[in-house]
Amino acid sequence: MTTFERTASPRAAPRVTLPASTSTVTVRAIDAEARMVGNAKLFVQPEIAGHEEINFTTMCFLIEHKTDAGTESILFDCGIRKDFWNAVPWALEHIGTLIADMDVGHGVDEILTEQGFNLSNLRTIRGHRIHEVDFPLEVGGFPAHDYFGDGSFYLLDVPGHTIGHICGFARTTPDTFIFMGADCSHYAGMLRPTEYVPMPDTIPPGTLDPYFPPVCPCSAFTVLHPKAGTSDHAKPLSEARSQPFYDVTRNPQGIYELADLAQESVDKVKALDAQENVLICLAHDVALVDILPLYNNDASADINDWKDCGYKEKTRWGFLNDLPRDGERGRPPLVRGLWCGGNKVVRNEEGVLELSSESGHEK
Image (cartoon, rainbow, N blue to C red; front, side, top):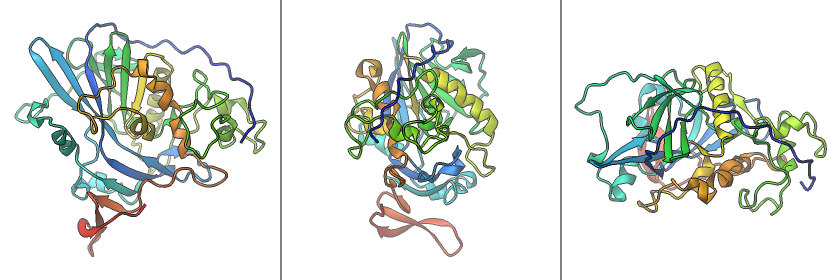
């Protein structure tokens, strides 16, 4: 684990279309309190021995748009419903296949309420007609819709996970942005490293778990990379430092309805990830919950100052903690079994999920 490699030289980041405006929104990060363990081969490919399962957290965002008329609040993504056993059939089919283990602590509505937020202040479609959204603009290579009409927040058409999958793009200062990736990619190792942002010689301090040495060479991870092509720690191929660990799975039972289109979307996100003024926030990236200041703990906390705080650098390589260590799995599973608010969720005699009275936790 102590073998160092020659510095990888990055290619210049591609230019992407980022529209100009001085209007901004305030972005507050919410831990949706869902912990899941997924079947890796149904999310990513190729397979890496020892990484047959992937840990997922879930994050959503409270977005505040301030004008002279007042503040308008919207919620981007809603996390996992607390009573997930009552989900629509399509979602229920994922439990036990794509997602074997899950724990939902609170609903996002409960989290907002506990922090003093009035749910009636959320912009809602209740009582209004629903219209199909047009995407006449382009932002970061994606068709875009200017949600507030002033360049502060965009909805992006990012298909693949589903045909109508959308992402959010928030302007946090006149020249910095947050890309809210939702389910366009479920693991940051599908985006990183790239030729624009290769894995550094040593992983930045504070990124890795205490298991690793304070100065940890990238060879601890490149040896695991499918592009390494050798078990010799000293001579992995250079591609291991400049290509993502994973691609979108092509497994027909996988999470992506349109896998090839999903990969095209992921490739565009890689270009955004290479921009110094764009923070990528995937909904299920564990590193974000570990690092970002959360609304759950402080209702006044926002992440608009992400660039000054270095959150991009602090979270970029956090996904490495989930990879195998010395032939064994990396971090332990976040949860075992199905749980909600401390109570176990079980299948009854008819095979239907239901909440039981059994409490406790299996981790």
